[in-house]
Length: 253
Length: 260
Image (cartoon, rainbow over all chains, first blue to last red; front, side, top):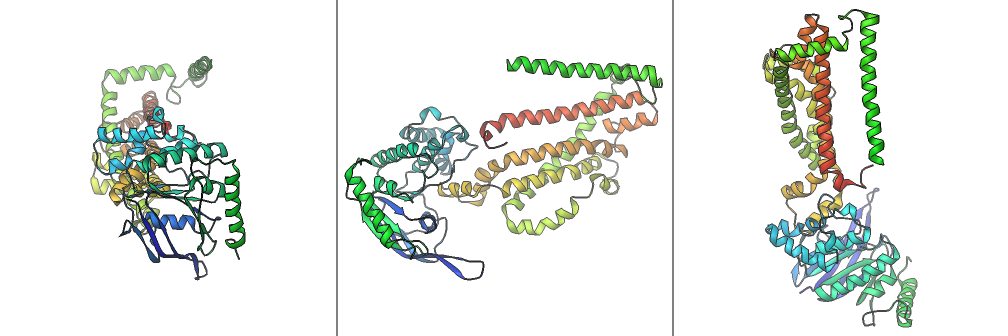
Protein backbone atom coordinates (compact mmCIF):
# COMPACT_ATOMS: atom_id res chain seq x y z
CA UNK A 1 0.00 0.00 0.00
CA UNK A 2 1.05 3.60 -0.44
CA UNK A 3 -1.74 5.97 0.48
CA UNK A 4 -0.46 9.37 1.50
CA UNK A 5 -2.46 12.04 3.30
CA UNK A 6 -1.08 15.50 3.94
CA UNK A 7 -3.15 17.57 6.37
CA UNK A 8 -2.77 21.29 7.07
CA UNK A 9 0.95 21.25 6.58
CA UNK A 10 2.69 24.56 7.37
CA UNK A 11 6.33 25.46 7.45
CA UNK A 12 8.16 28.75 7.87
CA UNK A 13 11.75 29.78 8.28
CA UNK A 14 13.12 32.68 10.35
CA UNK A 15 14.38 35.64 8.35
CA UNK A 16 17.45 37.64 9.31
CA UNK A 17 15.33 40.58 10.53
CA UNK A 18 13.49 38.32 12.98
CA UNK A 19 10.26 37.95 11.03
CA UNK A 20 9.10 34.64 9.61
CA UNK A 21 9.04 33.59 5.98
CA UNK A 22 6.06 31.33 5.39
CA UNK A 23 7.04 28.69 2.87
CA UNK A 24 4.08 26.34 3.07
CA UNK A 25 0.68 27.54 4.18
CA UNK A 26 -1.87 24.96 5.37
CA UNK A 27 -1.31 22.46 2.61
CA UNK A 28 -3.68 19.50 2.38
CA UNK A 29 -3.90 16.84 -0.30
CA UNK A 30 -4.03 13.11 -0.80
CA UNK A 31 -2.16 10.73 -3.02
CA UNK A 32 -3.68 7.35 -3.72
CA UNK A 33 -1.84 4.05 -3.73
CA UNK A 34 0.15 3.44 -6.99
CA UNK A 35 -0.62 6.93 -8.23
CA UNK A 36 1.91 9.07 -10.08
CA UNK A 37 1.59 12.66 -8.92
CA UNK A 38 3.67 15.62 -10.03
CA UNK A 39 4.05 18.70 -7.89
CA UNK A 40 4.52 21.64 -10.20
CA UNK A 41 5.58 25.13 -9.27
CA UNK A 42 8.11 27.85 -9.99
CA UNK A 43 11.35 27.94 -8.04
CA UNK A 44 10.97 29.14 -4.48
CA UNK A 45 7.39 27.92 -4.07
CA UNK A 46 8.32 25.36 -1.44
CA UNK A 47 8.26 22.19 -3.55
CA UNK A 48 11.48 20.87 -2.11
CA UNK A 49 10.46 21.89 1.42
CA UNK A 50 7.27 19.88 1.01
CA UNK A 51 9.13 16.82 -0.22
CA UNK A 52 11.65 17.02 2.63
CA UNK A 53 8.80 17.07 5.12
CA UNK A 54 7.21 13.98 3.56
CA UNK A 55 10.64 12.31 3.55
CA UNK A 56 11.03 13.06 7.24
CA UNK A 57 14.29 14.97 6.71
CA UNK A 58 12.70 18.08 8.28
CA UNK A 59 9.92 18.49 10.81
CA UNK A 60 6.86 20.55 9.97
CA UNK A 61 5.78 23.44 12.21
CA UNK A 62 2.17 22.41 11.99
CA UNK A 63 0.08 19.75 10.33
CA UNK A 64 0.63 16.08 9.86
CA UNK A 65 1.43 13.46 7.25
CA UNK A 66 -0.08 9.97 7.21
CA UNK A 67 1.15 7.01 5.20
CA UNK A 68 -1.37 4.16 5.07
CA UNK A 69 -3.06 5.64 8.12
CA UNK A 70 0.08 5.88 10.27
CA UNK A 71 1.41 9.29 11.18
CA UNK A 72 4.95 9.79 9.88
CA UNK A 73 7.73 10.92 12.18
CA UNK A 74 11.25 11.00 10.81
CA UNK A 75 12.59 8.78 8.05
CA UNK A 76 10.77 5.58 7.26
CA UNK A 77 11.94 2.55 5.30
CA UNK A 78 8.60 2.74 3.47
CA UNK A 79 9.69 5.98 1.80
CA UNK A 80 12.49 6.20 -0.75
CA UNK A 81 13.99 9.36 -2.18
CA UNK A 82 15.86 10.38 -5.32
CA UNK A 83 17.63 13.72 -4.93
CA UNK A 84 18.09 16.54 -7.37
CA UNK A 85 21.87 16.64 -7.05
CA UNK A 86 24.08 13.64 -7.50
CA UNK A 87 23.80 11.79 -4.23
CA UNK A 88 25.57 8.52 -4.99
CA UNK A 89 28.40 7.71 -2.60
CA UNK A 90 31.52 8.26 -4.71
CA UNK A 91 33.60 5.83 -2.64
CA UNK A 92 31.27 2.92 -3.36
CA UNK A 93 30.88 1.03 -6.61
CA UNK A 94 27.51 1.04 -8.36
CA UNK A 95 26.46 -2.30 -6.88
CA UNK A 96 27.57 -1.25 -3.38
CA UNK A 97 25.60 1.98 -3.71
CA UNK A 98 22.44 0.06 -4.56
CA UNK A 99 23.08 -2.46 -1.78
CA UNK A 100 23.74 0.25 0.83
CA UNK A 101 20.26 0.28 2.34
CA UNK A 102 20.18 -3.52 2.53
CA UNK A 103 23.61 -3.48 4.16
CA UNK A 104 22.24 -1.11 6.81
CA UNK A 105 19.51 -3.64 7.50
CA UNK A 106 22.22 -6.20 8.22
CA UNK A 107 21.56 -8.39 5.19
CA UNK A 108 24.40 -10.80 4.31
CA UNK A 109 26.58 -9.90 1.34
CA UNK A 110 25.42 -12.59 -1.12
CA UNK A 111 21.78 -11.86 -0.47
CA UNK A 112 22.07 -8.09 -0.84
CA UNK A 113 24.19 -8.37 -4.00
CA UNK A 114 21.56 -10.65 -5.49
CA UNK A 115 18.76 -8.16 -4.78
CA UNK A 116 20.84 -5.15 -5.82
CA UNK A 117 21.67 -6.99 -9.04
CA UNK A 118 17.97 -7.32 -9.84
CA UNK A 119 17.43 -3.57 -9.50
CA UNK A 120 20.57 -2.90 -11.51
CA UNK A 121 19.01 -5.07 -14.21
CA UNK A 122 15.81 -3.09 -13.97
CA UNK A 123 17.63 0.16 -14.84
CA UNK A 124 19.70 -1.63 -17.54
CA UNK A 125 23.10 -0.93 -16.04
CA UNK A 126 24.29 -4.44 -15.24
CA UNK A 127 27.53 -3.97 -17.12
CA UNK A 128 28.47 -1.03 -14.87
CA UNK A 129 28.14 -3.07 -11.68
CA UNK A 130 31.72 -2.54 -10.51
CA UNK A 131 32.22 1.01 -11.77
CA UNK A 132 32.47 4.04 -9.54
CA UNK A 133 29.88 6.84 -9.91
CA UNK A 134 32.53 9.23 -11.25
CA UNK A 135 32.83 6.92 -14.26
CA UNK A 136 29.13 7.24 -15.15
CA UNK A 137 27.26 9.92 -17.10
CA UNK A 138 24.71 12.11 -15.34
CA UNK A 139 21.78 10.10 -16.65
CA UNK A 140 23.31 6.80 -15.54
CA UNK A 141 23.98 8.19 -12.08
CA UNK A 142 20.35 9.13 -11.64
CA UNK A 143 19.27 5.68 -12.84
CA UNK A 144 21.52 4.14 -10.18
CA UNK A 145 20.02 6.54 -7.63
CA UNK A 146 16.53 5.31 -8.59
CA UNK A 147 17.67 1.68 -8.28
CA UNK A 148 19.22 2.45 -4.88
CA UNK A 149 15.96 3.94 -3.60
CA UNK A 150 13.90 1.04 -5.01
CA UNK A 151 16.16 -1.67 -3.56
CA UNK A 152 14.58 -1.19 -0.13
CA UNK A 153 11.17 -1.80 -1.72
CA UNK A 154 9.49 1.37 -0.41
CA UNK A 155 5.78 1.93 -1.00
CA UNK A 156 6.30 5.61 -1.71
CA UNK A 157 9.03 7.04 -3.94
CA UNK A 158 9.84 10.74 -3.69
CA UNK A 159 11.68 12.38 -6.56
CA UNK A 160 13.03 15.91 -6.30
CA UNK A 161 13.59 17.20 -9.84
CA UNK A 162 15.78 14.16 -10.48
CA UNK A 163 16.26 14.91 -14.18
CA UNK A 164 16.67 18.67 -13.79
CA UNK A 165 20.40 18.67 -14.49
CA UNK A 166 20.23 16.47 -17.58
CA UNK A 167 20.12 17.42 -21.24
CA UNK A 168 16.73 17.29 -22.99
CA UNK A 169 17.33 14.04 -24.86
CA UNK A 170 18.55 12.10 -21.83
CA UNK A 171 15.74 13.56 -19.80
CA UNK A 172 13.06 12.34 -22.24
CA UNK A 173 14.61 8.90 -22.27
CA UNK A 174 14.73 8.69 -18.48
CA UNK A 175 11.10 9.85 -18.22
CA UNK A 176 10.08 6.97 -20.42
CA UNK A 177 12.20 4.53 -18.45
CA UNK A 178 10.73 5.80 -15.21
CA UNK A 179 7.20 5.14 -16.44
CA UNK A 180 8.22 1.59 -17.42
CA UNK A 181 9.73 1.09 -13.95
CA UNK A 182 6.58 2.44 -12.34
CA UNK A 183 4.45 0.02 -14.40
CA UNK A 184 6.65 -2.87 -13.26
CA UNK A 185 7.06 -1.99 -9.59
CA UNK A 186 3.79 -0.12 -8.95
CA UNK A 187 4.99 2.33 -6.35
CA UNK A 188 3.27 5.53 -5.39
CA UNK A 189 5.42 8.29 -6.86
CA UNK A 190 5.54 11.96 -5.95
CA UNK A 191 7.65 13.79 -8.48
CA UNK A 192 8.68 17.40 -8.22
CA UNK A 193 9.28 19.46 -11.31
CA UNK A 194 9.02 22.97 -12.69
CA UNK A 195 8.54 21.71 -16.21
CA UNK A 196 4.93 21.61 -17.42
CA UNK A 197 5.94 19.28 -20.20
CA UNK A 198 7.47 16.81 -17.77
CA UNK A 199 4.45 16.93 -15.47
CA UNK A 200 1.97 16.33 -18.28
CA UNK A 201 4.04 13.53 -19.74
CA UNK A 202 4.48 11.64 -16.46
CA UNK A 203 1.62 12.08 -14.07
CA UNK A 204 -1.91 10.96 -13.31
CA UNK A 205 -2.49 14.18 -11.44
CA UNK A 206 -0.63 17.48 -11.25
CA UNK A 207 -0.68 19.51 -8.04
CA UNK A 208 0.12 23.11 -8.92
CA UNK A 209 1.57 25.24 -6.10
CA UNK A 210 1.52 29.02 -5.84
CA UNK A 211 4.77 30.74 -4.94
CA UNK A 212 5.42 32.35 -1.50
CA UNK A 213 3.62 31.20 0.50
CA UNK A 214 3.18 27.77 -1.06
CA UNK A 215 -0.50 26.94 -1.32
CA UNK A 216 -2.30 24.52 -3.57
CA UNK A 217 -3.50 26.51 -6.53
CA UNK A 218 -5.14 23.69 -8.42
CA UNK A 219 -5.14 19.94 -8.67
CA UNK A 220 -5.27 18.87 -12.26
CA UNK A 221 -6.21 15.42 -13.57
CA UNK A 222 -4.38 14.47 -16.74
CA UNK A 223 -7.05 12.93 -18.98
CA UNK A 224 -4.75 10.83 -21.13
CA UNK A 225 -3.81 7.17 -21.31
CA UNK A 226 -0.27 5.93 -21.64
CA UNK A 227 2.02 5.83 -23.51
CA UNK A 228 1.68 9.52 -24.21
CA UNK A 229 2.92 11.15 -27.36
CA UNK A 230 4.58 14.51 -26.76
CA UNK A 231 3.90 15.63 -30.31
CA UNK A 232 0.19 14.77 -30.37
CA UNK A 233 -2.56 17.37 -30.45
CA UNK A 234 -4.07 16.05 -27.21
CA UNK A 235 -0.79 16.47 -25.41
CA UNK A 236 -0.38 20.03 -26.65
CA UNK A 237 -3.89 20.84 -25.55
CA UNK A 238 -3.44 19.56 -22.00
CA UNK A 239 -0.15 21.39 -21.80
CA UNK A 240 -1.81 24.63 -22.87
CA UNK A 241 -4.57 24.18 -20.31
CA UNK A 242 -2.08 23.74 -17.49
CA UNK A 243 0.00 26.70 -18.67
CA UNK A 244 -3.07 28.94 -18.98
CA UNK A 245 -4.16 27.93 -15.52
CA UNK A 246 -0.77 28.77 -14.07
CA UNK A 247 -0.66 32.13 -15.84
CA UNK A 248 -4.15 33.12 -14.74
CA UNK A 249 -4.30 31.86 -11.18
CA UNK A 250 -1.06 30.53 -9.84
CA UNK A 251 1.52 33.23 -10.50
CA UNK A 252 2.70 35.79 -7.98
CA UNK A 253 -0.10 38.22 -7.26
CA UNK B 1 55.21 6.62 -27.03
CA UNK B 2 54.36 8.12 -23.67
CA UNK B 3 56.42 5.46 -21.94
CA UNK B 4 59.37 6.15 -24.21
CA UNK B 5 59.32 9.83 -23.33
CA UNK B 6 58.99 8.99 -19.67
CA UNK B 7 61.95 6.63 -19.77
CA UNK B 8 63.95 9.29 -21.56
CA UNK B 9 63.07 11.82 -18.87
CA UNK B 10 63.99 9.36 -16.15
CA UNK B 11 67.30 8.83 -17.84
CA UNK B 12 67.86 12.60 -17.81
CA UNK B 13 67.23 12.68 -14.08
CA UNK B 14 69.80 9.94 -13.52
CA UNK B 15 72.25 11.89 -15.64
CA UNK B 16 71.76 14.96 -13.45
CA UNK B 17 72.50 12.90 -10.34
CA UNK B 18 75.70 11.51 -11.82
CA UNK B 19 76.78 14.98 -12.95
CA UNK B 20 76.14 16.40 -9.50
CA UNK B 21 78.23 13.63 -7.91
CA UNK B 22 81.10 14.25 -10.35
CA UNK B 23 80.97 18.01 -9.75
CA UNK B 24 80.86 17.47 -6.02
CA UNK B 25 83.84 15.12 -6.17
CA UNK B 26 85.89 17.51 -8.32
CA UNK B 27 85.02 20.53 -6.21
CA UNK B 28 85.87 18.72 -2.94
CA UNK B 29 89.10 17.17 -4.16
CA UNK B 30 90.45 19.94 -6.41
CA UNK B 31 89.14 23.16 -4.82
CA UNK B 32 88.32 22.67 -1.13
CA UNK B 33 90.93 19.98 -0.47
CA UNK B 34 89.68 19.54 3.09
CA UNK B 35 87.45 16.60 3.88
CA UNK B 36 86.33 18.20 7.16
CA UNK B 37 84.82 21.22 5.40
CA UNK B 38 83.41 19.20 2.49
CA UNK B 39 83.82 15.43 2.34
CA UNK B 40 83.90 14.10 -1.21
CA UNK B 41 81.45 11.45 -2.44
CA UNK B 42 84.22 8.85 -2.28
CA UNK B 43 84.92 9.77 1.38
CA UNK B 44 81.21 9.41 2.07
CA UNK B 45 81.04 6.07 0.30
CA UNK B 46 83.91 4.63 2.30
CA UNK B 47 82.40 6.00 5.52
CA UNK B 48 79.15 4.30 4.57
CA UNK B 49 80.92 0.96 4.07
CA UNK B 50 82.70 1.41 7.39
CA UNK B 51 79.46 2.12 9.23
CA UNK B 52 77.70 -0.81 7.60
CA UNK B 53 80.53 -3.17 8.46
CA UNK B 54 80.40 -2.11 12.10
CA UNK B 55 76.66 -2.85 12.06
CA UNK B 56 75.75 0.57 13.45
CA UNK B 57 73.53 1.76 10.64
CA UNK B 58 71.01 -1.03 10.90
CA UNK B 59 70.73 -0.54 14.65
CA UNK B 60 70.33 3.23 14.18
CA UNK B 61 67.64 2.63 11.63
CA UNK B 62 65.72 0.31 13.94
CA UNK B 63 65.90 2.65 16.93
CA UNK B 64 64.82 5.64 14.82
CA UNK B 65 61.91 3.75 13.32
CA UNK B 66 60.73 2.89 16.83
CA UNK B 67 60.85 6.57 17.85
CA UNK B 68 59.05 7.50 14.67
CA UNK B 69 56.40 4.79 15.12
CA UNK B 70 55.75 5.72 18.77
CA UNK B 71 55.30 9.40 17.92
CA UNK B 72 53.24 8.90 14.78
CA UNK B 73 51.18 6.10 16.32
CA UNK B 74 50.26 8.26 19.30
CA UNK B 75 49.43 11.13 16.94
CA UNK B 76 47.07 8.86 14.97
CA UNK B 77 45.44 7.40 18.07
CA UNK B 78 44.79 10.82 19.58
CA UNK B 79 44.49 13.08 16.53
CA UNK B 80 41.90 11.07 14.59
CA UNK B 81 39.30 10.57 17.38
CA UNK B 82 39.55 14.21 18.50
CA UNK B 83 39.34 15.37 14.89
CA UNK B 84 36.25 13.23 14.32
CA UNK B 85 34.57 14.46 17.51
CA UNK B 86 35.27 18.10 16.62
CA UNK B 87 34.19 17.71 13.01
CA UNK B 88 30.98 15.88 13.86
CA UNK B 89 29.86 17.81 16.93
CA UNK B 90 29.74 21.60 16.99
CA UNK B 91 29.85 21.76 20.80
CA UNK B 92 32.97 19.61 21.08
CA UNK B 93 34.53 21.88 18.48
CA UNK B 94 33.62 25.06 20.36
CA UNK B 95 34.97 23.51 23.56
CA UNK B 96 38.32 22.23 22.26
CA UNK B 97 39.12 24.71 19.52
CA UNK B 98 40.72 27.43 21.73
CA UNK B 99 43.06 24.94 23.44
CA UNK B 100 44.16 23.53 20.12
CA UNK B 101 44.62 26.94 18.54
CA UNK B 102 46.94 27.91 21.42
CA UNK B 103 48.96 24.68 21.42
CA UNK B 104 49.22 24.31 17.66
CA UNK B 105 51.63 27.17 16.85
CA UNK B 106 54.15 26.06 19.52
CA UNK B 107 57.07 24.56 17.57
CA UNK B 108 57.38 20.85 18.46
CA UNK B 109 61.02 21.32 19.46
CA UNK B 110 59.97 23.80 22.15
CA UNK B 111 58.51 20.79 23.97
CA UNK B 112 61.92 19.16 24.40
CA UNK B 113 62.52 20.51 27.96
CA UNK B 114 59.21 19.14 29.15
CA UNK B 115 59.73 15.92 27.24
CA UNK B 116 62.90 15.40 29.32
CA UNK B 117 61.30 16.41 32.62
CA UNK B 118 58.18 14.31 32.09
CA UNK B 119 59.58 11.24 30.41
CA UNK B 120 63.33 11.38 31.04
CA UNK B 121 65.81 10.13 28.46
CA UNK B 122 63.53 7.44 27.07
CA UNK B 123 61.93 6.33 23.84
CA UNK B 124 58.69 7.88 25.02
CA UNK B 125 60.44 11.20 25.37
CA UNK B 126 61.56 11.20 21.73
CA UNK B 127 58.14 9.91 20.71
CA UNK B 128 56.50 12.80 22.55
CA UNK B 129 58.40 15.45 20.58
CA UNK B 130 57.54 13.68 17.32
CA UNK B 131 53.94 13.37 18.48
CA UNK B 132 53.69 17.13 19.07
CA UNK B 133 54.79 17.71 15.50
CA UNK B 134 52.55 15.08 13.91
CA UNK B 135 49.31 15.34 15.83
CA UNK B 136 48.07 18.71 14.56
CA UNK B 137 48.18 18.07 10.81
CA UNK B 138 46.27 14.82 11.45
CA UNK B 139 43.75 16.44 13.77
CA UNK B 140 43.12 19.49 11.59
CA UNK B 141 42.68 17.48 8.39
CA UNK B 142 40.41 14.94 10.07
CA UNK B 143 38.33 17.80 11.42
CA UNK B 144 38.27 19.50 8.02
CA UNK B 145 37.29 16.28 6.27
CA UNK B 146 34.40 15.64 8.63
CA UNK B 147 33.27 19.27 8.51
CA UNK B 148 33.01 19.20 4.74
CA UNK B 149 31.07 15.97 4.32
CA UNK B 150 28.41 17.01 1.78
CA UNK B 151 25.01 17.24 3.44
CA UNK B 152 23.45 15.34 0.54
CA UNK B 153 25.44 12.20 1.45
CA UNK B 154 24.23 12.32 5.06
CA UNK B 155 20.63 12.82 3.94
CA UNK B 156 20.84 10.09 1.32
CA UNK B 157 22.23 7.81 4.03
CA UNK B 158 19.41 8.69 6.40
CA UNK B 159 16.81 7.95 3.72
CA UNK B 160 18.39 4.52 3.26
CA UNK B 161 18.13 3.58 6.91
CA UNK B 162 21.50 4.79 8.15
CA UNK B 163 20.18 6.95 10.98
CA UNK B 164 22.31 6.34 14.10
CA UNK B 165 25.18 8.74 14.68
CA UNK B 166 27.62 5.86 14.94
CA UNK B 167 26.54 4.41 11.59
CA UNK B 168 26.52 7.80 9.88
CA UNK B 169 30.10 8.39 11.02
CA UNK B 170 31.24 4.92 10.04
CA UNK B 171 29.50 4.50 6.70
CA UNK B 172 29.11 8.06 5.42
CA UNK B 173 31.33 10.63 7.10
CA UNK B 174 34.46 8.51 7.52
CA UNK B 175 34.79 7.34 3.91
CA UNK B 176 33.87 10.80 2.68
CA UNK B 177 36.54 12.39 4.90
CA UNK B 178 39.20 9.74 4.29
CA UNK B 179 41.06 11.47 1.43
CA UNK B 180 41.46 14.59 3.55
CA UNK B 181 42.56 12.51 6.54
CA UNK B 182 45.14 10.65 4.49
CA UNK B 183 46.63 13.85 3.12
CA UNK B 184 46.86 15.10 6.73
CA UNK B 185 48.66 11.92 7.73
CA UNK B 186 51.02 12.35 4.81
CA UNK B 187 51.92 15.87 5.96
CA UNK B 188 52.27 14.52 9.51
CA UNK B 189 54.76 11.84 8.48
CA UNK B 190 56.89 14.54 6.87
CA UNK B 191 56.81 16.71 10.00
CA UNK B 192 57.42 13.70 12.24
CA UNK B 193 60.47 12.72 10.23
CA UNK B 194 61.89 16.23 10.58
CA UNK B 195 61.28 16.20 14.32
CA UNK B 196 63.06 12.86 14.61
CA UNK B 197 66.58 14.25 14.33
CA UNK B 198 65.97 16.94 16.92
CA UNK B 199 64.21 14.49 19.22
CA UNK B 200 67.28 12.26 19.24
CA UNK B 201 69.83 15.07 19.65
CA UNK B 202 69.34 15.39 23.39
CA UNK B 203 70.41 11.82 24.01
CA UNK B 204 67.35 9.67 24.60
CA UNK B 205 69.09 6.57 23.22
CA UNK B 206 72.51 5.13 22.39
CA UNK B 207 71.54 4.66 18.77
CA UNK B 208 69.40 6.44 16.25
CA UNK B 209 69.99 8.18 12.93
CA UNK B 210 69.68 11.64 14.48
CA UNK B 211 71.63 10.67 17.58
CA UNK B 212 74.63 9.37 15.66
CA UNK B 213 74.54 12.22 13.16
CA UNK B 214 75.25 14.46 16.12
CA UNK B 215 77.72 12.00 17.65
CA UNK B 216 79.88 11.94 14.52
CA UNK B 217 79.71 15.71 14.28
CA UNK B 218 81.29 15.81 17.74
CA UNK B 219 84.01 13.46 16.48
CA UNK B 220 84.44 15.78 13.48
CA UNK B 221 83.71 12.83 11.16
CA UNK B 222 81.84 14.90 8.62
CA UNK B 223 81.92 12.07 6.07
CA UNK B 224 79.77 10.03 8.49
CA UNK B 225 77.49 13.02 9.05
CA UNK B 226 76.82 13.16 5.31
CA UNK B 227 76.04 9.42 5.32
CA UNK B 228 73.38 10.00 7.97
CA UNK B 229 72.00 13.05 6.14
CA UNK B 230 71.59 11.05 2.94
CA UNK B 231 69.99 8.11 4.74
CA UNK B 232 67.54 10.40 6.54
CA UNK B 233 66.61 11.97 3.23
CA UNK B 234 66.19 8.65 1.44
CA UNK B 235 64.00 7.11 4.15
CA UNK B 236 61.83 10.24 4.23
CA UNK B 237 61.46 9.95 0.47
CA UNK B 238 60.53 6.26 0.72
CA UNK B 239 57.84 6.96 3.32
CA UNK B 240 56.34 9.68 1.16
CA UNK B 241 56.47 7.51 -1.96
CA UNK B 242 54.71 4.68 -0.13
CA UNK B 243 52.00 7.13 0.80
CA UNK B 244 51.62 8.43 -2.71
CA UNK B 245 51.35 4.87 -4.00
CA UNK B 246 48.66 4.14 -1.40
CA UNK B 247 46.71 7.29 -2.28
CA UNK B 248 46.86 6.56 -5.99
CA UNK B 249 45.69 3.02 -5.48
CA UNK B 250 42.81 3.58 -3.11
CA UNK B 251 41.50 7.03 -3.88
CA UNK B 252 42.21 8.04 -7.42
CA UNK B 253 39.91 5.36 -8.76
CA UNK B 254 36.87 6.94 -7.16
CA UNK B 255 38.05 10.52 -6.99
CA UNK B 256 38.82 10.98 -10.68
CA UNK B 257 37.04 14.05 -11.90
CA UNK B 258 36.62 15.40 -8.40
CA UNK B 259 40.15 16.44 -7.56
CA UNK B 260 42.08 18.87 -9.65
